[in-house]
Length: 291
Image (cartoon, rainbow, N blue to C red; front, side, top):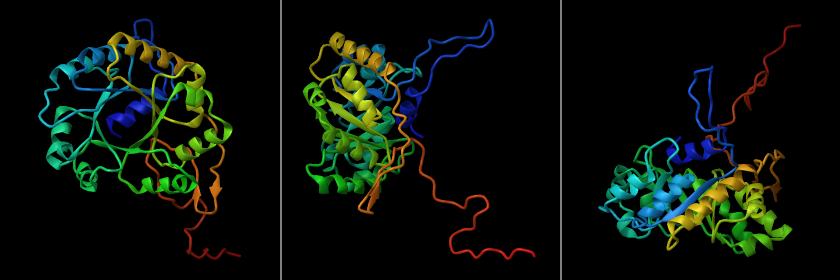
């Protein structure tokens, strides 16, 4: 499990323990159903420091180029266990070669974000770099067929997905039951955790709605936003998430036309079906029973 998936798992667990009278104690943090992610540019040094101190879990660098000096940016994010992990968005051919991916990985990027237009060679090249996770960006389907075909993304060698929904407060406040069902179906149709983009940090009711959809991360845009204002958005969103219970709906996935079954994505790799105790493998004859 790479750094991004480990961070997504970590935020859903209780943090902070102490043992005995003299045992070391750390600040207890409540589990959250989703991580707080921020998009920044390489020049947003002050904002990077501000969101790191406010408790952002991950940062996506949107304008990275091979050879970019990230020393100040990485220093602003910090290097402790509670510091945000960061990755880069592959925005043009200059950033998609194996050499470019190696440069990002060597610079400390934990993941790369690929759009649907990213050359497939970059997807293959990323698999050669141990520890570099791949995140695929998906546009919201425009119709029912697109919603069904989004399941093809499961064939990609990726660890997470970003749904570029760009949900605004008005979108979330006016979302009807049908829209909620479609969004949840899309989320559960993917085998990996889904992060969703918003236009600004949602309020508490909207945060609860996104948690019930099942998203594992909420991506807040940080470009052209003052560090103090962005830090307040991160801090407030964290507090909303800490007061939001996890989506514990364990109902069986719904089959659609016999072609697909929705299920809650897990951070653990899916296992191949195996033989249950006391049951033979399919096609294996039962052993005769002694009379």
